[in-house]
Length: 412
Image 1 (cartoon, rainbow, N blue to C red):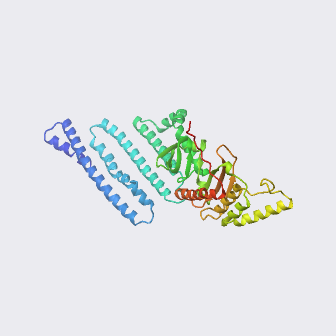
Image 2 (tube, rainbow, N blue to C red):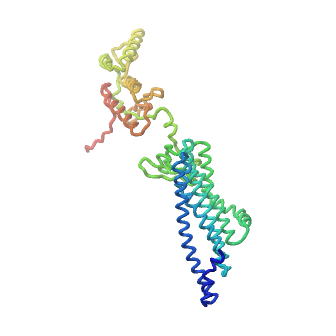
Image 3 (cartoon, rainbow, N blue to C red):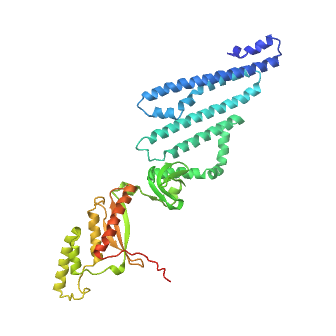
């Protein structure tokens, strides 16, 4: 091979060229031939290597090799052969230029380091994609750990590159890094905090990919789509993306709706504002009319029977309604609401079902409905809740109640 690299030199010398001119022309022609040869070799090598492994990956049942192909691991590995050849040939080609050869050796060292880092990166990305395909790792912050490994790999690579350029020992740089640790801690503060936060999030199972979280301070209200070393990406329900620093998940408060999603229902908590002046005692005629409503008929019969017995036993004067015990339209409506919810097909009967009266205010007397729909999908949940309140708003007049509405008097 040495004689081959000196072929044009010998040829030009035999033709009467000077040694300096022969060396220079031999170098130029050698570089051109070498570059063309390496280009073709790299092209052929990559095609052969990639086609072989693609064929193997398509036949293999394991998807790990498919991700190796996807992340171009074999493309990077194919570069090893041309790079090895150029490292072997260049010293012979530049034998007359030792200073240039020395600089080229440094360049080739850097190329080797960078190629190794690219190979490591593609393998790490393959592990990331493979682990994300497993059910047990889908909701884990895999990106954070991969980024930490990549930072470590690049740190080693940069140290090796500087060592190669300066010709100094690796330990010299490591010693200098130890002395600069305070500065490095300041520079990589967010990275370190993010890494620690990622571990805490994973170990404590605080947040998973796919969780619905709400962080009002940063305008986040949606699904977690990515957790990496520096940030958490939340796709809001309006399809915008909110980015939150990872360490904020451990240092600040946020709401995770996973508990609701894992439970048997989604909470309905909304109030009807009843006009306070429409609340009254029920007359015998009112009670008889309301007994035609099937779901409260049995309740009214039993309740009225107990009230009548009590009033008779205590000789209550019922010429005035306020005397003794009485049924009110608000109380009966409250029982109707609970009975309606308990018979509703989309309300979870194993969770809390309650209608409660809240403190009266200038806007009326609130009657709060507290229950859980058994369908947690947002669209279906909203439809169920709307249907329930449509029915209750339509039912209110049957109890001689009125919904409070704020009217603005425009008359001067």
